[in-house]
Length: 386
Length: 211
Image (cartoon, rainbow over all chains, first blue to last red):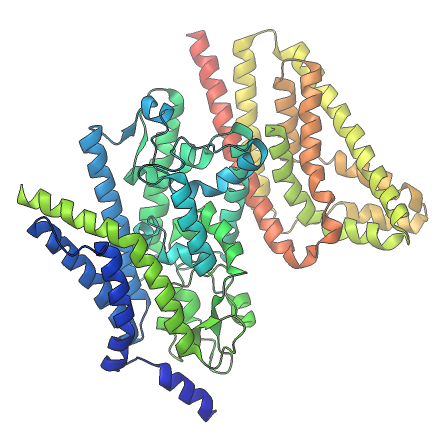
């Protein structure tokens, strides 16, 4: 027992400025190199300011995660800013280039559509059958090329499993943000079986994409077209498509998260999330519940934004569709829930496991998000200065 | 391929409902793999013949009654699609615990000791089970331009429903039954929305053709 306590105490950074600072140092160095590309000169004050704010945001967040022992709220700040700034700068660029958010036929034909990771499940069957990529984008060149986005997704999936949904996805911040607007949920009771809906969506989009050789999720139902780009309304079909994606955005991304305090789009609709659940099986990181400490208060089940914890998973002590956001860990009054490395005992060494997980996941988030946040800040400053 | 997908979506529900009855029967009753294979083969063959007969009927009805007037065809089919999609939603949401109707057949035939006819009986009952996906497939088959097209549609629908019967004896079905059942249910809901969209487009085509 004392060896277990000593092991956790040695690695614990909670309440200890020096230890937290020491562990933050490697992150500072890596992010400095990555964000500057090794070049510390800036062409103007605005760029320097944008970089400074961006860098401080990440470093301070990571330090506070280690110092306070709380994960979710600091993760959420960056995650939500990532989503907002990415959409903001994306839309800004579109308006500068095209004058609107609509995609033209010319851009389809020239394969100039930026690739988004949500398309990935739809590529698998057609690629296996026809050995071609059914998305009008560039394989290797340009912004958000197909190969680069798939490599990033694969890396994130292998490193974090479904943790990609809480530490990598640049759309998840939208419903994460809306789910935090009110203090208490208006709709409390949500059937846990809804967690299987994304799997049905996954099956249908994969099959229909194979049937039509087109990315049907993007074409018909992706709600995030409302904050990126979409097809111009030119026919009855495009009217239907527009009504669908706007309704889904307003319903699943805005309204339901506000009313339920759950990430409805991610938990109950996203097919990529369903696919990434399978990566949870091979991922080394997981959330485990210490049955000796757990008093069955079910606070973790109430706060979990994905409904990953219910009676069954509490009995098994293993949440299945968990995205490792850390909200249950922060909420547990008995400190019974922890990040854990697979194969190690859930009752000991969890501090080291947490530090290891945080380092990997935060680094992934920072590498993925820092560019978008910095660009967004820069564009915001340009707007303000005009 | 659309028929195949319709079969797949209804197949998950059929499998979750009846898999735990059908497969313990097939796997436990006879000693040898050859005998089990023979029973399974009989079951699948009889189902195939029934589905082809239904496909033929759909094609005949479609060719003789639905090809003459385009407007009436579009309006009838469109209304039919939407009504069947609503029926599908009703079936999905209303019956929380659906019991497999095949159970009574197995019990009855076991009592009568006519074991060699059980697979045939199971196939007939399973094939003639009037469920919303089958009705939707019938409507789609009737909408095809020829009798052969209608039969081909039903063949693909059959393939979609049958594909789940092939690997299941090797899977731990009971353990995953809840997930399969709910995924099947939700897939049916999604198919329902697609059918509603098709119905609306046909109705609009019918209306704007008149005007």
